Image (tube, rainbow over all chains, first blue to last red; front, side):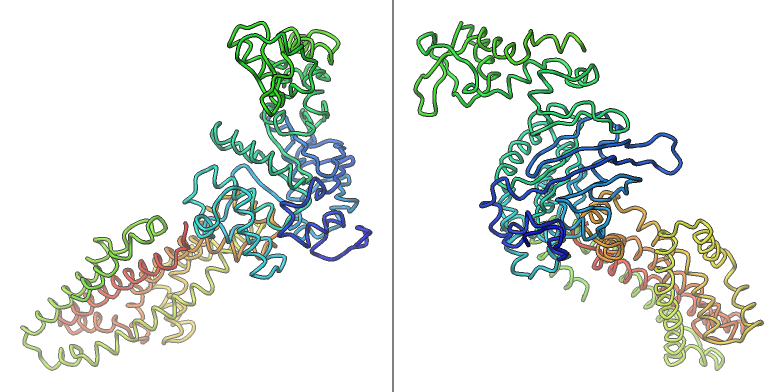
Length: 366
Length: 263
């Protein structure tokens, strides 16, 4: 088990790194911290559909670190979904190489491979004739888990996605709301504790309020399970909110920029990326910077009674400044003591400091 | 009376499992059909009691004869339908799976010809070139009622949400597992509807089996015609119709019971 490449055991087909997680599945959710993901590498991957002259995906290369949440963002038809689906071979690449923890995906049995890659699609695709428990049990059953182990896992996962097992295990998908179905979809993909998850606009079909809730829950979940996740979306804001890194893709899945959300917002690589960010790039960046990372004023400068907590974002602070009309407001620590103050000038300076200029520059370009 | 007893029992069960069984099990239509059948047969019986039965009629209008013919008729119907299920469902799966247009076209053309050819012509031709009797009648019936099951199997598989099959594939099910665990269970309601149509077809068409000495209730009808004994003709026709209605009714119940829960 020390060398993942020599391990041909079916149940740990995707390498040794997650082995601990795969074996002691019932405890992983709470114990594993950012270690259960696999390393994914795509090298010169191409996809050409038989009768078409232009490739759907051309020369795509990317490295995804273990435990990283990478967002593929791009307009419809840019090939982002195709690229993602080549990783679990729902779509077969025409050429190139894809490795997961050093193992060439194209040399593995596709069915065995897919049992170790979580897969969530926008329309969820829950099996309507199976109960929620049966839906989640599908992959464990394919892997030959015992009934006892499977049942425990189902209960555990339902709790993880905040659905009460006693209420929901025996229900059928159509008896659940869209948001609940989506949670089951995530739970089902996590069932066998795969090191890699592929998610194709998983929250796309839910209403904005449910979506935001699901996103927050999903982030919290990812913090504890630390999967390597490829997440496809066309919503740039969602990408900024969730992603460790974002790949902005254009036609034929060309990578226009691949960087952290903050870096992309601060310095879009080109006009295409800038236009994708859209208006309000500065505000989007502010939402990513917590107050304790910013250079703040003295506590004594604070005016009024309004205050923000230092773990809040600069955007929250700006929101309150605008609302109250005060020159500066108090920043408190978790215990409620005022430790600093923040003003509009300081917020502007924070934006200007990283970009070496006015933040409006990126917007002017679009 | 028995029906009312059943109704009461089921009504009390229904609210407990609300949601999954989408509608009330004992709908008006479901209760009416058997009542109609019983009433019609009763009227037929009473009517025949009022007639003076001559020796020719007596030979056919007696319980032994009618039961024998009914049994022959039902055996033909059910054996033919079972054969159709065994042959047409796999053919439907192959036709919907194959990439070869030629194969799909061939299967559909044969099934279409089977249904389009008048049953009486087909059965007699078959008797001339092969033999008379049960087996020939069976083949004719299978050919005639093949298409509904074939078609419905194809439609049943085609109407499944592609996202469901994609996620099944994405979870690592083999194509065979996707078919057996996901697609066929979800296609069951449509396939059963096809089988129901086939069964009813068979009941009707089995009457022509009499022309090649394969028995069935067609005997009564033809005897009644040839011997100009209309009560016999009418009795035969009414009984066949009642059987068709009854089988359709039973099949509709089977459809509801076998439909996967949650769909």
